[in-house]
Image (cartoon, rainbow, N blue to C red; front, side):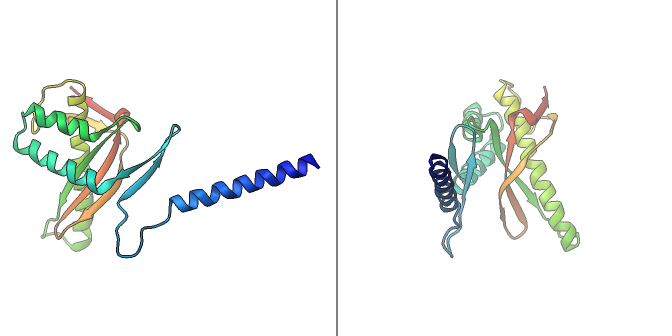
Amino acid sequence: MKQIIAAILAVSALFVSCREKENETKKAPKGKADTTVRQSTGRRDFSLDTAALFNRLLALEDSVRKESSNRELIEKLLETSFDSISGSFYSVGKGIANPEHPDAARQQARKRAAVTDARRWALYLKSWHHGSDISFGDSISGKITYSSVIAERDGKDTLLQLVQVPVGSVVAEY
């Protein structure tokens, strides 16, 4: 009898936890874009506001492009881009369409260019994170063994991608 009651309680607990998980992942109402990414770590769940992160990183990256040796801007970019919970850098890559290519090739090239640009930012971020005084635009080399596209924005001819790159997958050659 005790075993039956324990089994019923276990099934009830499982059912309740499944319902809670389902409620967490519901879509945004029609007409509203859901810009929140939910991530689960072994320690806790957290939400990432991709729209705010996109805007902040894009503004900081553009500022660093213009003032490539400004250490204050680089520190702000590092602070914004590094996620200590996941141990990752976030960066925004830009891919611009070449109007001379056919449409399918143009779209593919934009995606490839956006990811490549975001990965290049990750190389700079890792070198700055390790204290390098390299300026943006200086020659940098290395490789990225893993990255994932978190979100993207598609403009008329420019594709922006928010990319997450774990620190350990960035192998920068100093």
